[in-house]
Every structure is written in structure tokens, then in C-alpha cells.
Image (tube, rainbow, N blue to C red; front, side, top):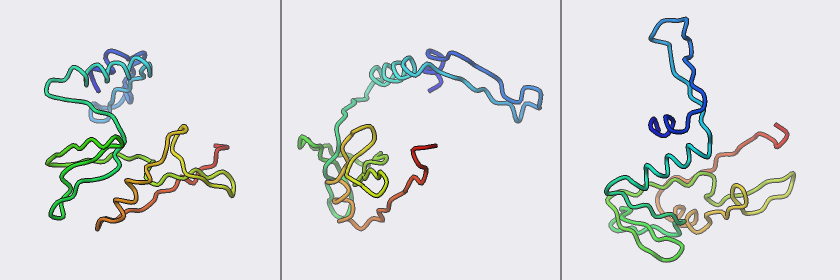
Length: 136
């Protein structure tokens, strides 16, 4: 992140500059497009890192342990550890007034299959709700 902000930063400022060094902090503002490009370039050029981007549909479970993931296209990835970063897409619902429908952010589809699979496992799955209206 530090190298990306060095590449994409458009404004840097020291916060609490008039106070002691213990409370000072540097704030940086970045050009979104340049920052995204810098992070992507850093990741793509990282040795021993393979990036594969696709939605996970299922988990591979053996002996009560998650040992891999299966993508939408049926590709299987086995791993010592599996980290799911699902955001708001697990069984995602869009609410507009009294109406609601399945969906994700910006027209992306919800992760219904993965949500169903997680509920089958002895895991706690719950929903966080954003209580702010579109007017804010």
C-alpha cells in the first residue's frame, strides 16, 4: 500500500503537526485509477503469487476441515487455509422501499450457492444490514 500511494498520491499532509510526535500522522490522497493500477501491477509482479479471479460456488470439506474451493467454472483449488472475502454478496438482497430482490453491489450477482453451502456447515452465518437510506 505504501508503494502504491507513493506512485499514485496527489496530496500528502501531516495531521496534528503542531502537536507532539506521538499523535502526528501522515494522510495521503490518491488518484483512484493510478492507485488501482499501482496495486494491480505490484500484485501481478509479485514472485510466487498466482492470481485467479472468479466466484466460489462450493467448498471442499474433508474430515470437518475446509481444504479447498470450487469456482463457478468447476475449477478446484486445494489449500492449507481458505479465506473467503465475500463482502455483501452472500445471499445478497437489494431493498427498495417495501420491495426486495436478489442482487449485489452495482448489478453484480449475489453468492447464493456459497451462502447455502456455508449454512450447511456448522458455522455461524448472519447478516449485517446497512440502515442508511439512499437519501444520505
